[in-house]
Image (cartoon, rainbow, N blue to C red; front, side, top):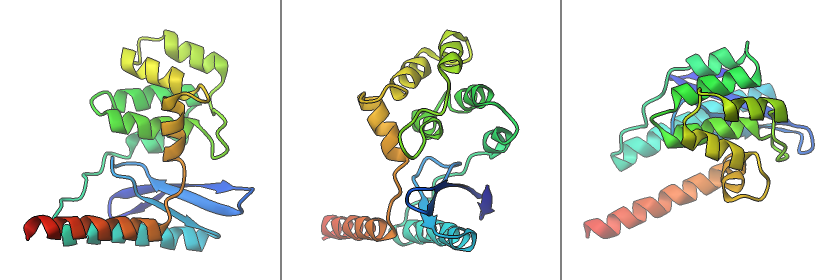
Amino acid sequence: MMNYKGYIGVAEYDEEAKIFHGNVINTRDVITFKGKSVKEIEQAFHESVDDYLDWCRKDGVDPEKTYSGACAKAAEDTSQLEYLFMAAAASQDCISLWFRYLRKFISADGTPQISQAELHTALESDELTTFQKVTLKRAMTRGTPTYNYVFGLNQPCRKTMVKEAMRIVREQKEKHHD
């Protein structure tokens, strides 16, 4: 786990691709980064946060507020089920945050990272809202729209794609101002 300017980044190693993929976990905005070494992933994390803040400043948009890292920090010392319950509590008022937490339960190769027993326990508990139970169940079922959406959140975003998207947004704003 890395911290930079209040943003918490988490990276995972993809053995097949031989690369680290990471994302910022304490904001609803999607900020991703990648690198081939620890040094590269740290540098890419800092650059991605700086690019995001620069984009917000240039476009006159307030950066998304960061959430407390309590849930992410606690994940280091807890089981998947305990982490799921903490994530559910932390995201009850924010659907997009719930989906960002759900993506932690699907690995880069698409395999659910929660056992069937843990899934059953979660679905039977009072810790999750009805919405959270439905989306959790669907997110853990390959081929459902919810699974596809959550799995897509795990896919790395190339920096060039982000810059191109920012360029298009700027052009559209300029057209609206003319």
